[in-house]
Amino acid sequence: MSETTSRLALPYIMAAQAQKHVTHNEALRLLDGLIQIRALNANLAAPPSVSSEGDAYIVSSPATDAWTGWEKDVALYADGSWFRLPAIDGMRVWDADAETLLVYTAGSWKALSDALNLLRSTPLVHVARGALGSTTGLGVLEETLSGLSGSIVETTITIPDRSICLGVSTRTVSAITGATSYDCGIDGELSKFGGSLGIAAGSINKGIIGPQGFYADTPIRLTAKGGDFTGGTVSVAIHYLSVGVLDAP
Image (cartoon, rainbow, N blue to C red; front, side):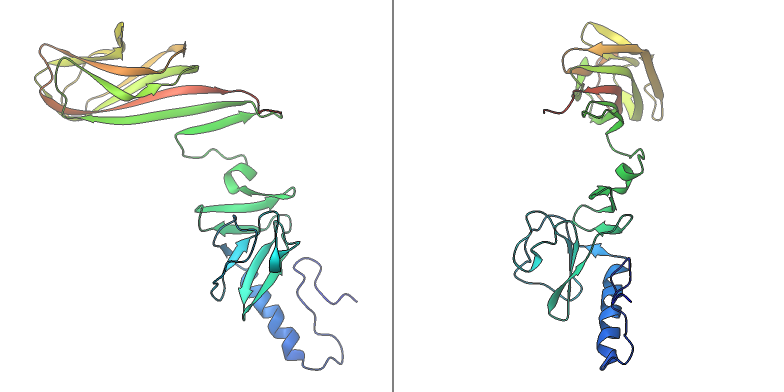
């Protein structure tokens, strides 16, 4: 009979064993570390100089000192010593430093969204990835322009170079003054994403275009109509597809 359980390597109390409480307490200690694991980070390859009871880390490579040989496993500090919690397929750990849930699968730790191929709420999401690292992404860039002034206002965000723009949306956050309406576009195509747009707070526009490739970083331009801008706030969002080249060999 094995001396430990097959999955979590918890020690069994053996027949006629003396001081059974020692084995029992060790199993409880390991369970306490394994259940709802919270690792401080996944960046250390050697134990920190100062540790507190219950601290845990996902050990990086190359592991040294007390963690030698523990690469990718979880190191748990308990009762003044480091204990090894072997990583097994499907193990989940909350990485407090990265603020993400990690899953151990196919020999490595992955963010839950990557392990399950989930879409994430981030400015750029890769919705497809080839075996050699090429990607197709969906992206959105946002900026709020406040205190509008003059005949034109441009964003600091840009339609990215070598991307495919799907459109630009706008929302008038606070009423625009001075102008009677405004156009949303780019240099040379002032109403590309919408013309004579509303100046009242709450006015919106979904400036969809036929997908178009851009070959330089291109800012969005708001152009006042009926007079110069003298105030107001507009939020602008660029909606685009990204093309990522394959990873270097």
